[in-house]
View 1 (spheres, rainbow, N blue to C red):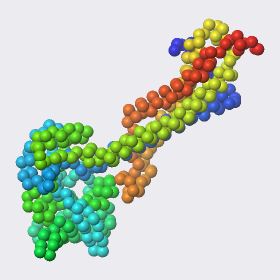
View 2 (view 1 turned 120 degrees about the horizontal axis):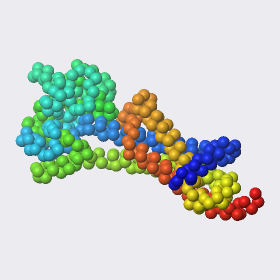
View 3 (view 1 turned 30 degrees about the vertical axis):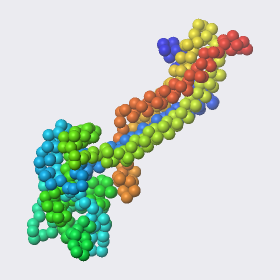
View 4 (view 1 turned 45 degrees about the horizontal axis):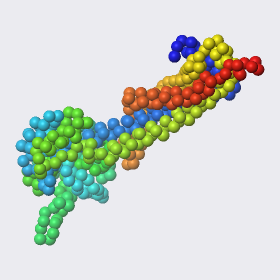
Length: 411
């Protein structure tokens, strides 16, 4: 497309803007339609991406990247096993853990929960990463004495439900009790709250109870066994490959589970929803493209004389077609730029001020997260411009087919 085609296209478009009537209004509506579609795509895809990234961050703040377990039983010689796992390329840290479901009771309240036993070095580091301690100190979980009940850290939602504060006592009941002549009796023991934490996910804050590995081993009667090993890796998106390498190195009866496999259905649903929203919202731009096509048709009808004069002066069919293609692309480009600016502005406001709140007992998060990725923005811009280009092809072809003799016969 040369200077001549671009110059004439700009003059035609400027003339349409000055005109009073349907063509001018149609141009504005087409531009606004493209802008609204691009803005909606930017905001919705940004929210979906932010939700996906925020969910990954919160899940990995509590759960390990890779979990090593043993079929049928707990792991006894876990120190030696941890040393072998640390030799696998990509592994950063390895910690033993215990995981079991229990009942929690406080005066006038009862609730289900999950006990997680942590190694002393994790406790001294302040607990799992990304946890926010609201009250007390997480390091106190390792400061147990024989005279006092073991200390635990509980989530803020669980503390609210059981009406507990730092220093209060609660009873923990495990159904995996001792086998006696009277049958299996549950274990029950008092514990003392030393810290209240916040993870940002209602499910974790409402059920998790942390305590030291030794205290939980004593409570469950496990001796020196643990449920498994938590493995942290360098690249979370290579966790499946590291898990496969660990499993190959150790062999049966050990097996691994990475965070992607454990949450596969959840993240697959989020990805599918993001693709579906992209396709649905692209229809807004498609509707605006029909507006661009109708605007060009009206422009061809109104500018019949000008087109005939250009062709009489030597303009080729290709040049006439390119003039109207540029016109349509300009309408689409202006709408895309306006929509991009409005969408990024709205995403920035949502991210900074968090004025949209979500019910935490329904969703995993309390506010609407937003994260705009450059690849998503590029795909949205390309989609808008391609749809705008396709909308210009038939009207431009009709303009190029115009016979100058017929057009000027009655002038």
